[in-house]
Image (tube, rainbow over all chains, first blue to last red):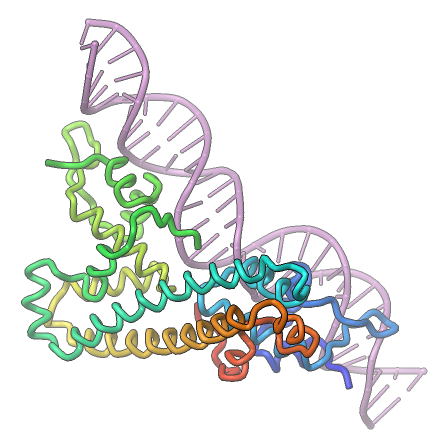
Amino acid sequence: MSLRASQVADAAGVNRETLRYYERRGLLAAPDRSPGGHRMYDEQAVVTLRVIKAAQRLGFTLDEVADLIEVGRRRGRDSSLQARAAEKLVEVEARIEDLILIRTNLRAAIAAGCDDLHQCASSDCCPIPFVDLADVTTPERTSPR
Amino acid sequence: MSLRASQVADAAGVNRETLRYYERRGLLAAPDRSPGGHRMYDEQAVVTLRVIKAAQRLGFTLDEVADLIEVGRRRGRDSSLQARAAEKLVEVEARIEDLILIRTNLRAAIAAGCDDLHQCASSDCCPIPFVDLADVTTPERTSPR
DNA sequence: TTGCATCCGGTACTCAGGTCCGGGTTTACC
DNA sequence: GGTAAACCCGGACCTGAGTACCGGATGCAA
């Protein structure tokens, strides 16, 4: 059984136009067409869309997502996959570190309540949860997002 | 001692124009000016810039960052701060969860090496590290990024 | 077979986040 | 005091990621 564009879009929670857009960008395989030219998707398309959205939420660009999908597709013979995966791993781990720091600070801010924050604000140790991060971050990391 | 625009920009690893831009957006306080009108920053500006960049890397929008800075500035009397911090905490924790899942899968992919990946690719469990995420994700989370 | 929702391709628009330009000062250094 | 580098402002431009619109074609149900 095949799905039409807006069924897929609805199922994945995206705009119908986004399907065409992703197809243009090579993120979504061009589906079969009906005799009249309408796109006919399978359920896999929905999964792919969700995958893309998930990856995006984590800060991967569409190009990066395209890469990862690509890499998953043309299997073993491209062993740069290992390298890519390793790179991503490093990125992901750095992100986790950062987020954990933020979390710690947010928790502290919440636990301390407004009174301590007051004191804190006057002594310039706010903007709240980010100060540590700023120090930790290497300056050369010229935001490749 | 005061710093000039490009010194600050260089120190923080951003474009000089970005300073003006952030000033317009209210993210960076308008600095003092020289008699001739040139901006004269202090070292704090560099820290603030790094803070902003750090927050951005974690997926906060400039508006959100502005919020957080704002909130840190006008201290206790605005007790919605607690609420905001709590909200952010939830977001941050969700992000961490997602990233940990990704990390797990990336590690597995790396550990398995290309051979297993090969097998994997043919059985449709690739694109590598995102499938689980796709299932876990509630469809209604219509990416508010 | 008619009617209406849906889809088509192409193009234009939006929004965030910057970045670049250009003509005219201002500073810093010799 | 001269001059090159840095800076000013306003506005145009750019990229990424979608979204909207259009006139015409298609799908499907009654």
